[in-house]
Image (cartoon, rainbow, N blue to C red; front, side, top):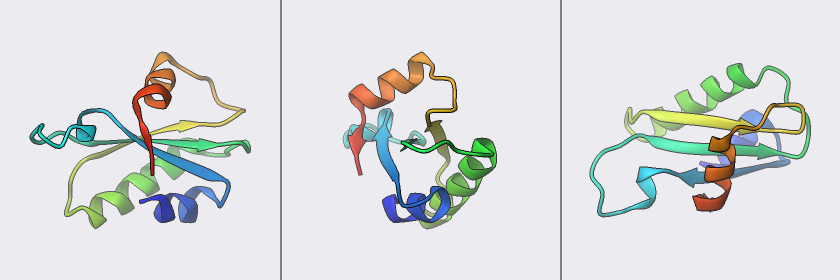
Length: 89
């Protein structure tokens, strides 16, 4: 997944998995990903959709949600949760 994120968002990208998929004993649930970049990201919604589609196909159609963090984008409480609880891929 991290390689795919770098293909879509660029090489200066970090990827974190967060949410219910961190618990191997939990069943189901979508895949929640945080893409972090130190560089501004133009068209984050388009890139997030592209990454979600690629990862979903790699995972046999599982639903994927992508949250994007970059210096030019507004940060929300979800960004903080994803950084604190997520694991770097």
